[in-house]
Each structure stands twice: as structure tokens, then as C-alpha cells.
Length: 367
Image 1: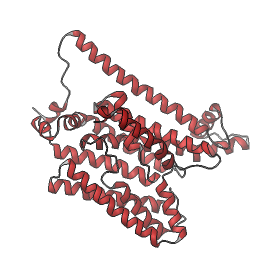
Image 2: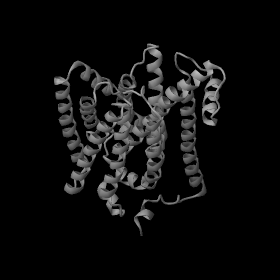
Image 3: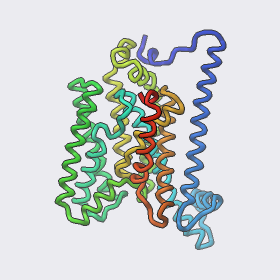
Image 4: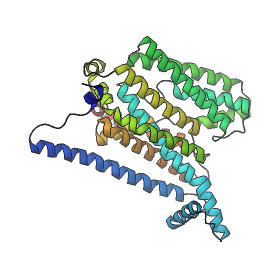
């Protein structure tokens, strides 16, 4: 019997009433997913409407339709609104949706494969490595580079991916278990954090300010190539993760030894899926800066609502992550308007109390 056959869920056995109950359970999960997608659409439209220029729902649709069809409004005010929506607001909201989805998926994968509900996409030192890469890029390319500056993005992405490659190589060569992998990530987090702090200590004020602004996390400088890059990555990653969802369930629920008895190559699955989760995280934070609690809290909220089955948990974690980031960005634009509070700050302020509440009230569900 092949590994694929072993990973495929067995057909429900038992009387017809049991089969109906299972179909009803899956129907409820599908309903939650559809409802979540509708919620994302609604919050995204609201997010596009927000701004000092203002825009009605019809105005947003007209601006997008005119741009897609190539029509140019005759009214100068309508032309200006079209430019604002297409070049500023729409990429910002879409980057928040896709970035939140990527972090939510990565968080669910890390928590499942490392069998620890308190880990996040930054457990393996990915975020500190990206912060070090961004700091180096600011020094070489100048403090004027923004969140969309290609030099800063490349610097953050390269260091994050190098860190991921190092961790996964060690895991493969040394055959590290989940606990040891987490400890390696903690050590690398401290190392990269110290190097970044050293750069900040000796940096000039302008360079220091640019580094600190990036570490706050923001979608202010979103551009279309970032949206397209994340969108393509998620579209390519999702089918693979669905195929592997059975193996992820076996590792997360039964442990490595039991999964091996089912014919699953635990090491290969863990390295490939964690590697993919790390890439999702690295690309996202290279574009947005450090955004902490989405990848930690999002999967927990999804698990409490839809259950632990990764077949449904993965897409619903993407939904909860997207909603958290879009709502946080909208709140950051409203609180002190016209000033904008970086989404990373709002995310931490909102995410920390939510996570404390989940820990104190739902300890069994988080275990």
C-alpha cells in the first residue's frame, strides 16, 4: 500500500446515521469557510473605502472597473480617486489579506508539525533573520528606502531564507526532533536579535529610524508586485498542503512513531512542509516588516471554530489570519486619522490580550 493511500482519510464506516452525521460535520466546516471568505470580501471593501479622500461602495467598484477596462473618467476628481484606489488602497488591502493568510497558514503548519501550540512562524528565527537583513540593506542602500524598496525587501528575504536553509539542513543531517528544532530556532533568534541590536547601537539616527520603522510592521508601502508574488506563492502552495494534510494530521495527533507505522516519511514531510511555511513567512515579512501575533493567534482562533483537522484548519487559518490583519490595518487608519498607526503595533495590542484570554479559558483546546 502506498503512502498516498495511507494518508487518504478512510471512508466513514458504520450505520447510515453515522455517515449523515459526518457529512453534516463537514458541511458545517465548509459553511464556516464560505462565511469566512464572505467576511474577508466585506472587510476588504470597507478597507478600500477608508481614507481621507473617502469613497462610496459604488465609487470603489467604478474606479476598479474603469481601471480594468482601460476607461479613463472624464471628471478630474474621479480620475484622482481612481489613482488613489488602484495605486494605494487596493494593493494595501490585498497585501494585508494575502500576508495575513500566509502567516495564518504558516502558523497552523508550525504548530501542527512541531506539536506545540505556542510556536509561531517566527519560531525558527525567521523574523530576527529578516530584521538583520533589512538592517544591513538600510545601511547599504540608504535610510530613504521604504517598505517597498527592492533593496530592503531583498535583504530581508535573503537572510530569512538563509536562516531557513540552515535550520532545515541541520534538521535533515542531524535528524533533529521537534523539540530540538524549536531550541535551535530560539538560539538563532537570540543571535540575530543581538546582531541587529548591535547595528542599531552604532547606526546614525536616520538609519536607526528607518530600521525601527520597518520592524514595526506595516502595509503602508504596498505595491502590486508584492501582491502578485504572495498571491502566486499561496496558489502554488495550497494544493500541496491539502495533499499533505493527512500526513500532517498523523504527525500532529499521533506523533512521529505512530505516523511512521502508517508508512509516512516523517522527516521528509516535516522538512518539506516547514520549509514551505518558512518561505511563506519570509516572503511576507520581507514585504510587511515584523508582524507578530497573526501567525500565533490566527490558527488558535481557527482551531477553536473549525476543529483540528488540517484539511479544514489550513484554509480557515488563512481566513482568520487575513481577517486579523485587514481589521488591524483598518483600525490603525481610523484611530488617529489622518495619521496611520503601523499594523504591527495594532496587531500586538489586540493579539496579546486575545491570546492571554485563549490561554486562560481554553487551555484544553489549545493543547
